[in-house]
Image 1 (cartoon, rainbow, N blue to C red):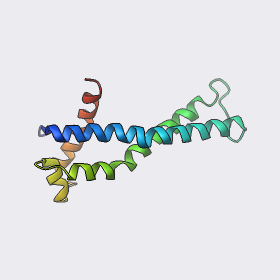
Image 2 (image 1 turned 180 degrees about the horizontal axis):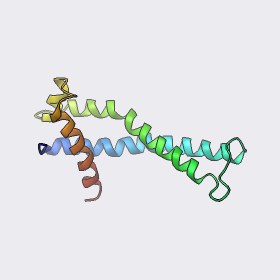
Image 3 (image 1 turned 60 degrees about the vertical axis):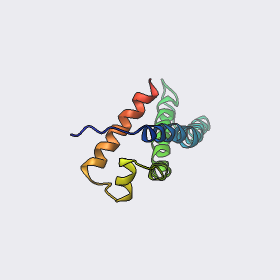
Length: 120
């Protein structure tokens, strides 16, 4: 595959999207989903595991909240990227080339970049 090099603005927006999607979507949904799962388990509506209680159900609820939070923030992130000037990623989005190899490479690279940024 091709190596995608992001501009500073693209990296900044991707980092913002990563943080905002977590704090504005994933975390609130996680509190809601895990809290509801725990409440339903405490009330006997969901059956707890004999050894681990509600742990695995809560972990599944947390994972679902994380995935749903990230998915529901994609449109907002796309809009932020499209507002960038001199951005190959924004140009690809504007031209509707979502399905091309270039954009797919960009998406994979952006996910990798988010983890690199997070741990720098």
